[in-house]
Structures are given as structure tokens and as C-alpha cells.
Amino acid sequence: MTGMPAPGALAPHPDRLLPAEPGVRSIARRLYDAVRDLPILSPHGHVDPRTLADDVPFSDPAALFVTPDHYVTRLLHANGVSLSDLGVGHGPLPEAEARAVWRRLCEHWPVFAGTPSRYWLESALAEVFDVTVRPSAATADDVYDRVAERLTKDAYRPRALFERFGIEVLATTDDPCDDLAAHAGLAADPSFPGRVVPTFRPDRYLEAAAPGWADAVARLGEVSGVDTGSYAGWVAAMERRREHFRAHGATSADHSHEDVGTEPLDDPERGYRAALAGTATRAECVALRRHMLLEMARMSCDDGLVMTLHPGVRRNHHSPTAERFGPDTGHDIPLRTEFTDPLRPLLERFGTHPALHLVLFTLDETVFSRELGPLAGFYPSVYVGAPWWFLDAPEAVRRFRRAVTESAGFRRTSGFIDDTRAFCSIPARHDMSRRLDSGSLAQLVAEHVLDEDEALETAVDLVAGRPREVFKL
Image (cartoon, rainbow, N blue to C red; front, side):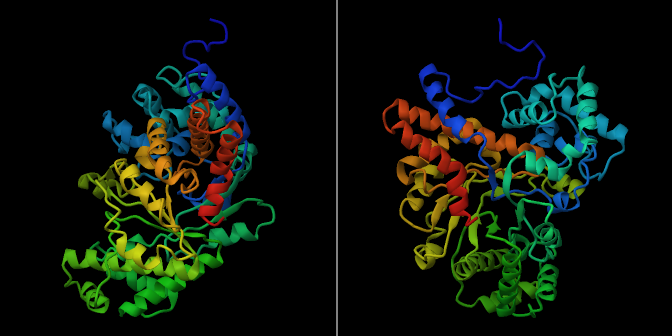
């Protein structure tokens, strides 16, 4: 048939992810055309700021697309490829080994069929690197050579791609003890027109049962200039580091624990000193973390940093892999999660505070309509975070819109977050969201729930308005 790509060609369809019904698709096209080229606001992600500060060319295709992307490595691992054979934990690879990693991706290309990873990889390869053939065992070396050749050009250095991708704001995720030198350098560099802001991520300093916690808290005290030998010092050190982050452009603090319990302690000093001494039980350590999460909400009311929560993950599910390769290597697994009662102490105190923006993310879809939508539909501080991680897939995004909109509307949601370490996947991820939201809105127009001008206004707001307002950008 004319207009169809040849077998084996890599040619993403211009209508991909838009509704199949012709009339609805026509509406969706018009909505998508209005938002497809709007600037990218990325308020939550994991790109290393030094990538942009140093502007060193990306070393090779494997280091760009495979090794740092746990979405990719976990599925390859599930299909029999060792993480070691994918370069995980190895640092920079010689060219021959990088090429071998790339071949393993291409040889296993069919395992990504139907996944969002396939969408992101295809979009980046075709639209950023001009690859025209589908990755496979037969084409692996040709695709590698095409991408590697592009990476030698100035137009493919990190800063050039940042500008080409249309990124207006990029938030990174940073340790409270980080000096944020990379952010300071970028902010002071007149040749860099973008905006890269840090995000305060204090998880390791709240988990008193974790190995090395006491040493981490001591380091926090050194960096902040506060004695953390007491509970009051621990709190003051956090406050000082938050102020340091705000001075470098931070607009949010990000928290990820197994649950979102926020019950206050009657005597946090006693619990804190027991934790420092190593005599606290695991239950006491969890209670201390829940109390400190409540304190973090109080700090957000005081300093204005947006508070984001994304709980419900069993980190490092496979201990042997964690011991060999470290964290963030693809085996964090979702847990059943509750919000309504665990968050009640926080919301009783701060849920109507005018300075608090509380963005709630989940990996448990069952809470979208049961808990998150109703919470955001009452509390002016609460927003429902867009689907992320295991849920930033087309069908999950569509389910999210149906489940949350009926009780919270569109304006109580966060706008899309890409949550990625894979720099070149950023535009593909945002494009996917824009297509899916255009399709959802088009369906409402076709059903005469919204007029098309209202749908257009909402589509633009989801891209340009929600993230800017919710994350105080």
C-alpha cells in the first residue's frame, strides 16, 4: 500500500497513540497540533546536571540509550541478558564493549514490543538521530554507527540537544549535602539560556534503620554547620540545606518511602537519640521517619518548596543484584499503597495552608479514584501527580485521566513528569503525554462533554499551565 513504511523501516506514524475512530482522531489531531511544539517543562527527573554543565559529548550509543536506563535494562535482564553484559556498574566502556551492549539491545528488540520503552527508543532514534531502519541483529552495527557518527557533532552535545528539545525548565534530583556547583555554574553561564534547577531529596537522611544513616546525618551536620547530635539539630540542618537549595533555584522537595505515614511522635528527641545510638527498633525508626515527614510538610509551609510524595516501592527487591550492581538497577517493585489515613495527620495540620503544594504520585492504580482524586477534590494543597515509572504507559495514562478527572478535574493534576535519567528520551516522553491527553480530551469533545475550545484550553494548560503552577516554576 502507498504511504506505508517498508518492512523493517523505522518510521513512527504521525498519528501514533491518537484515537482510532476517524472523527475523534480528527479532533485529537487539532488539539495535538496546538501543543506539540510548546516548550518542555520537566519538574521531576534524574538527569545529572554535570551533563549540561560540562557539555561533554555523549560517549557512545550504549551509554546514551541502554546502560543508564533501568526501563531498558530490566526488560533485557528479564529476557536472559545479564546486567553485567549491559555495562551496568562498569563505568565508561571501551568502544568494542559498548558496541556489544548495543548489539544485545538490538538482538532483543522484539521484547520491547508494546512497551513505552519501545515508543521512546523509536522516537529518539528516528527523530533525533535520523535512524531509518528498525533495530535488529542484522542492523545493529549500522544503527550504532549512525548514532555514534551523530554524537561526534557539536549539534549533538548536551546543551545543543537541550535547546533543540525545547526544554525551558529541567529539574534534577539532588542530595541535601550536594554543593550544587553544577547548578551554580549553569545559572552564571550567559551562553546557556536554559533553566536547570535542583530538587531537595532527603530520603537517606530520614531512614534511620538504613545502614550508614548515622554517618549520613553527621555529614549533613558538617555541611550545614549545625550539630546534629540532637533532634533539634537534625531539623535545623534540614532547614539550612533547604535554604541552600532555594538559593540555587530549587522549587520542590521530593520524598520516596515505602508509605506516607505522618503520625507525630510525643518525644521525637528520645527516638532520634536511640536511632543515633543504634538501639532503636525498626518500628521506632519507621515512626521517626513518619514524624520527620510531617516536619518536612511544616518546612514546606515555611519556605514554600513544593512537597512531592511518591511512595509504595520495595527498593532493591533482589538483594544479590543490589549487592553487585547497586541501587536503581531495575528491580524496584511496586507495593500496595494507602494515602487517606496515613496522610491525615499532615492534612489536618497543613492541608489548607496557602503555601503548601502537596503532589501525590502512586504506582498503585487502585487509589486513583478511591483516594487521590477525592483528596485533591477537597484539599487546596493537594494535586494528583501524573502516572510515572511503571504507569507512564499509554493505557495507564488513559485510565488515570478517566479515574481522576471525575472527582478532581484536570486542574488538580500535576502535568506530565518524565522521571528519566535517559536524556534523549525526554522529548519522546513528553510527546507521548501530549498525544494521550489530546486523545482523552478529543473523546470528551466527541461525547459533547466539552466544547472543542474548552478542550484546547485544557490541553495547553496541561502542558504549560499545570506544571508551572503546581511546581511553582
